[in-house]
Image (cartoon, rainbow over all chains, first blue to last red; front, side, top):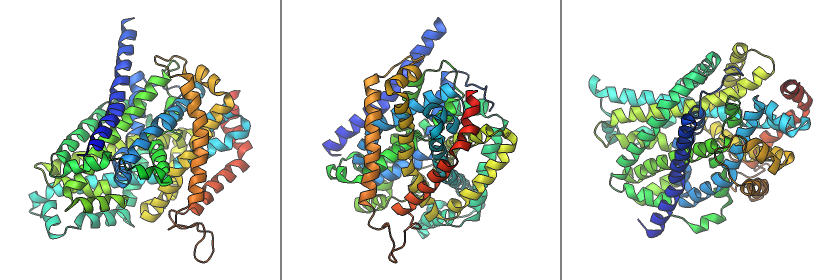
Length: 37
Length: 503
């Protein structure tokens, strides 16, 4: 694979898949906090 | 689903919005467009996720949560009584998509049956799919032509899909949908990841990955790619359809708009990327050369998912069973996305004072009559995909117009930020709304002024080119008719859908 393709793949996957996991983690934490209150 | 029904918790509405968004747009439409335009398209598609789809989904979610009625009624209550006709346009645009989307769902069902028959062939001493492809390499392409053009089984399955969908909704789908999505969505993700690993491990599969993520800078000058990236982002996330407005009408009164919207939007795009990383490498792995793969992808073939996946599975042990699982997942994903589309229409019919049971028969008849041409003819199907796919730019503008009219900052603080666990900056929302109003108008102008050389405004006889599948004239005519009818009926629409809600 060319360098540009590898860099673009990493940036795209980190943004989208990483974003999905990040927001999901926040929601899980918030729900956990609410259930403990 | 009665008006008082609610999703039981945050995960219920998140899974419903993922179920709505993850469907044929991810497994069928995204790989086709990513294959046609490569990494440039993907970058623009992400750009429009942030700029276009997320702000629109935030707006839709909060409108549905506040007004808790159908799209026409909710829109008219936010924008004012002069603008019910714009809510009507959103409804008809989504219906235009729903009619041919049901056909995609029926294709998935037909391919599920095809996979089952292929898996059973060895038991009855019939040649396997792999053997059929050796004796006739065009076998899968021929089957696709058979399914997508004038096939009565497709039409019968199309009607069955609509009837079952309406029947499920008439019984109260909330609990069923919520429970089903808890199994369906994680299963779909797992399955897509498995297929991606299989495709990438095949010889030349990595070339597909390279093609998918390589950015061709000259493509940024092509208005078609910008429009396709925006319409795909809207098509896949469901932004501007009014579907999120319909789903959130059943949300809890203290539901968190922002975080749920971000999870739905990013989850949907994750599924698209995984699907692309499964299907494009498969095309390269199965083609005789890279050139052949690229030529095939750049035709923008509607059949991509349907012809490549069955072939891919003939190359691996147990592939016939995996093929069944894939098309089952595709069918269920498409079906779970179709349900909110049917519900959007049903809810508007119910708003007219017709009971859910009686509205069900009308909805079925409506779908059968208006969806039949797409089920029968692939050219008509392609025309509708073009007309109403691009129409999502206009419906997005219509929703943003209502937000701007209400006051962007006021809307953000009063309707989006209420009960929020996670907030986005008001400046971001404000910039996106204003930028989108400019971008949307500019893109429509750009597309109008460029035209498409193969499909001009006027045909060779100088007549208005309304019947060419990708002509601008066809889009303008169909949009214009719906807008005109809505405008003439505005008073009726407002009185029937919105006024009673205000009392």
